[in-house]
Length: 433
Ligand SMILES: Cc1cc2nc3c(=O)[nH]c(=O)nc-3n(C[C@H](O)[C@H](O)[C@H](O)COP(=O)(O)OP(=O)(O)OC[C@H]3O[C@@H](n4cnc5c(N)ncnc54)[C@H](O)[C@@H]3O)c2cc1C
Image 1 (cartoon, protein in one colour):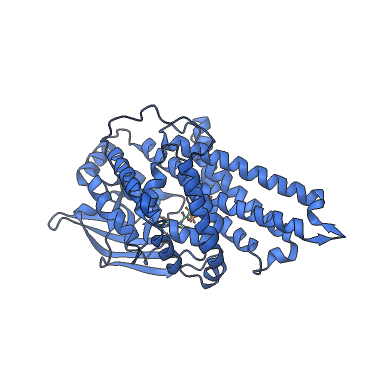
Image 2 (cartoon, rainbow, N blue to C red):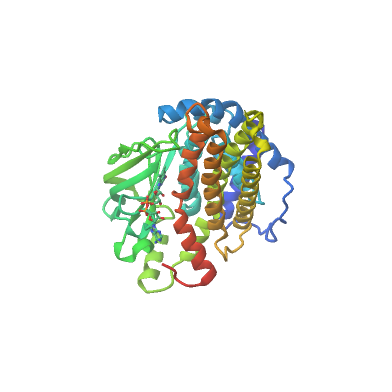
């Protein structure tokens, strides 16, 4: 990876330029869709798979039991360049859109808790990348990762105790202090991955509550800012190697330049909304739709791991004088698991390709991919437990952990119900409630 980091850097610069609108329009036609992976995609897949198999899997049980952030594993990932701005930039840079989901599937095949400890930072990075100016991207994104010798993590804080699915209910406020050119942020964030242990926090706050979600803005809270503290750490059902906690913001003052996108742009947007002009909610929806296949790919990694484990087990385990896979009920279950996983992957790849090549998500194809992959992961891991029988129910075997980990994929990044809401509204044009 080190030898490819120059290429990755160039690609990342190109992406930043694209985000800033400074492109020469060279790729306006977009890449053609193919399911045949190119050599770069195969190399990255094998590279991430090697790390997942050699480093992540052997550590999975320990960090799940410890319920702590696996800093030594993050450091290993940083040392080989996998946990870095350059690697994420390289995954993003693939014009087909497939490399990002492929890398996520492989990493989460290794273990989802550790996978999220490594990939959780990318939520904050995506917000900075999606909403920041080129200067803000250059300043804050590298700080989200730290260095290979001293890796850091970042947190994206949107949810609150009374604002989960309903983001319009966010109460955290940001008030501008003209005298000091600072924003003063107050509120409580809930469920933040890496909350409180992160160097960089990206916080969604309201600058005008009357405007609902159209009055929201995103702020970077720089490392060590006074008034930004970790609250209670959450003890979880699964994904236990990933830290989740409340974040308290008490008169937390950040420089004016920490408002992502800048004040001028915010003021223009608020003026448009107050005049009753249409807000750019379509753009926000496109962004959500484009990030959902990556989350779906993580769920796929868990589902595939459970499928592979139970397939091997079914060939080995003998009852009534034969391998249990010789029973149709077991073999058909495995056939269905493979079928569902492959079908979900096609939805994930389609949505990833659409997002990267700028296609319009007419039918909420991003939501479809996350919904399907999340539900397939929960179903497949439950079936895997069944195939392992009593062993499947114990912590001596990994499928119960996979099942616990999989469940979050029908809850975070939009619950299954919210995905169905988005899809039903998209296909019907009716504001389904
Ligand atoms: C491990 C973990 C990590 C997380 N990481 C982050 C993070 O890094 N940053 C962050 O900001 N948030 C994070 N979250 C929060 C997560 O995004 C929310 O939990 C999620 O959005 C759901 O919100 P909620 O828990 O408040 O559930 P609620 O919104 O209270 O929903 C409860 C139930 O009601 C259903 N429901 C709600 N509204 C409707 C409706 N209109 N129609 C039908 N059904 C509905 C939901 O589908 C769900 O089944 C994390 C959560 C967990 C558990």
